[in-house]
Image (cartoon, rainbow, N blue to C red; front, side, top):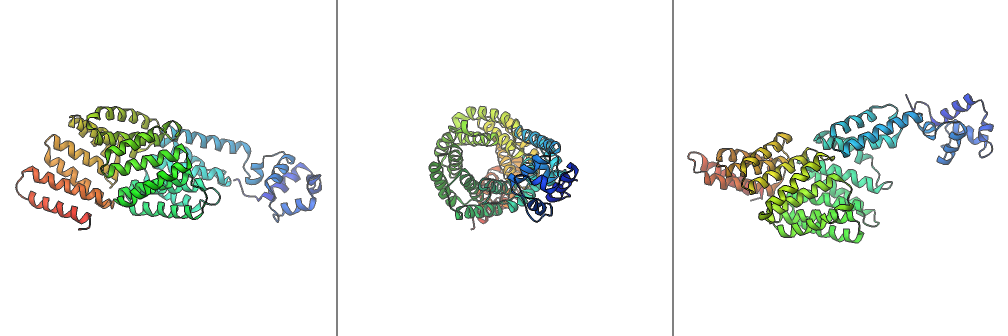
Length: 436
């Protein structure tokens, strides 16, 4: 197993095998006393000295530091690169397996940087595969070990990923807390705004929106646009416009949302993350369906293309289900509720029974399609489950709307018996969700 000997012990063993003395190894750049201190682990040599000794001892610097041969290290790097390619191409299960192979390697344990890359990739692969519980566990460990002083950008990325996974799981309060605490620490360090600060702010904004805190969301959206314009980075500007479009959509300002999303789309050519590209196109299509119902077919075509892009990227089941849900919404708008039922049902089956925002939206769209088909009892069941999911996830504003919609639907059913009682109960749940 690699890494059993210390750096000094490895240098001593290699020197003895080579048949040279400490003085011979040191000459002419170093002193024999310095070599003695290194071999007894009383001094830690600088990287330049390690490179020098590796050359003299006919080995790699990696081997001196870790005890892992260059060949083994190369094999691990190849596995890691293969895993990253699989993740980028949407093969989440394959990526997870390959990252896992690196993590399970005793040799990789002696290579901290490689091990960290494998853990980061493994967490993203688990998220893409829909295993949010395991992803969150991994990301908690990564955030605990990340250093804001050493690598500001990576520190922000792991906090963004943790907040995002918590939000997708429905833990909105903790999602806000993670992003808010990270923003506070990032701001306290001073320095110029970066892509990382805007991305972290966008993550916090998304959590505010889903929790129903629209006042803070709108304030933060304006701040993000100002920061992004100051930075001038296409990635930062796109993130800011994208999230501002989302705020506008939630507030019912659909035309403004479309305009902001279109500004973000203009920056797509300089954005490298395929998952973000797909999500932005999804957001734009969703806005089109709401702001310009006459352009439902255009939105549908964009969603069909986006579904193909998602299948070829590292996007996970959350994004796939979101795309299916918006396609179902488009089919309903185009007068094809049967197709909508099938698409929404596919999204729900993909997400399972656990309360998730994506599942709640799919259930809402399914309920609307059932209404169009005059399948009222099934519509009531779908909307009841959607409202229950949203309430469980602390999404109070959306839960209130879902309970209200359900009450209105119950009022239209014309069924006898306990319908009126159910309707009043739904109204009461709606009022409770908004604190009344």
